[in-house]
Image (cartoon, rainbow, N blue to C red):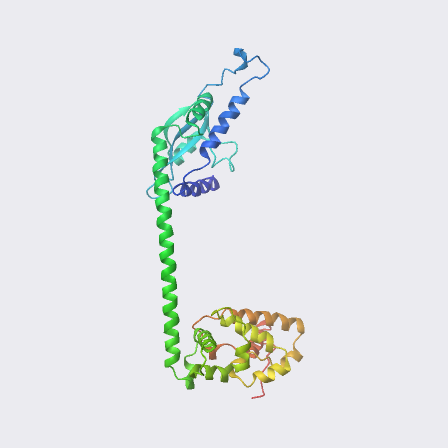
Length: 338
């Protein structure tokens, strides 16, 4: 019952913004099935015995049009709805998947507080469908409620579209303002003490600014000194988009196991963080090393924008830390080269 009520809560919430549902077609199909089941096609068309006596017995079958409420809300509003009552059992489109055999009328009325507007026998339903050229609702007041809801929905959709448009414009404006402030901060800072202020966001923007600038700026000179100008030129670019986590990941993949590349990386402080100690490669199992490679790459890609570049963990410290943690400090590798 809890799952059934949850399903109904979702349906009723959706109905507040949905112009049409499946409740009326579902109920009308039930009427057609009832007519088929209570018609004996073996009898002559004009024979009274052709029609079962319960055909129009509304105590056994009727379609009901009215409203139901989402009683889970603090201020529930009536929603136009159609359902079928067969004695003490109720069938409707929204409960049919979970309860194909229907639910008790008592539970239905207590839970959803339906207000009945019109009731129809199966034959009445067939006549009204032909007359109104639709499966419901066939009550003027209910139909007017749906028209008003459709008008509200159209206005709501237009307002949402405008709101999303304004939200996109505001997001772009804030992003451009943030970009401008970062660039101005870069221009005003002293690169002699870059370790105290250069973050992931700063470095991303320094790379972008260096690509655009024809003249060698202070930032461009610093970048060449810290990462190597040839390396910067070789970085892949898509417009002005630079994701430093991806840049560092690619650099790490380039330097991690290559002695020649690693030797070149030592000249540049930032890239030297990505240079794996060859002695570690010789003592650590290759499969374990591959696993730590992947973990370190994920770490680089997850760096927050306000992370100081100097605080990015050196790959060798990362590897030593993983080994110490996994072995509960029974295996500790120290760097005694310094």
